[in-house]
Length: 406
Ligand SMILES: *Cc1c(COP(=O)(O)O)cnc(C)c1O
Image (tube, rainbow, N blue to C red):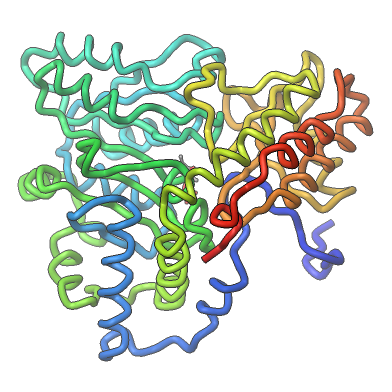
């Protein structure tokens, strides 16, 4: 039964790895009246958000903002830089990498999908060495782009993008580097310019703490150059007209005015705290949540501790336990949303988001929901994850900076 008129008491615990909880301050900013998108106030707003978002991507180059979900910005990244039949090298880190790979095929590209074998491959990050080896063998430079996911939201593994850049350089290969950090941006450290990324794709509803609805391409000079000769059809997604009009703070079509108010607020919040503070806060939350998973005696989906995601933690179920049955109990009984297992790991794991606007106690509530859900589902636990997370959070006090939202 669909119960759209059912509103539980208190706050819903939205602990999926995106959309993430939207701070009241951003909701209030978004409730301002919609203004004339050709008027003078809009131009000032446009220029301000375009400058702010460049700081978040850590780039001096253009960032294009689309009124679309992240998937649209994926398409924009491919359509602006590539031509029909182009070979692209992608790496299977999980479900989102697989979806981007499928999109490349649908657009008429020839993706080659590298990866580690089986479901076990979804416990690791991008293997830069495999990319280097493959690019070295491509002596004709048929491969036009390398596409990787920075924070793989289906697994909770954050790959080393600088290592992928070094691999491309070591192979002396001219391929563009395209990176999806839809869930990583503004929660996990990300450096578009320093890491030599050509197109970075992101979205609004994860680390930026906004509702879904806008997405981004950060574009290097080399990518812009490639877009001048790329032949995949593009009109709505074409960078040139947007970047041209953005110089005065406007868009060629109606932008998402109220989400841009929200973006303006999000940039103010994130930049006044400082990105390093934001990243440290999410790393600490990740530590606390992983302490709980270990105490339960369950496996963390990410098998490489150096690549633990500060955005979310994947929790693997013991053999024979349906992760979605546990999730359902936690949702129905305790009004807490957890992320489902996607693709190859459906039913085998679930995901706890610790991105965006949380605090120690929202995470404690989510962990308590999980622990009660496990007991109700009859899952045998080694111990109390709630106790372990309380010990972690109490024993590792967050500085005032880390607790300050702006
Ligand atoms: C959420 C997400 C997407 C999809 O973005 P939509 O906004 O749902 O289109 C793609 N890649 C990653 C890594 C994501 O986390």
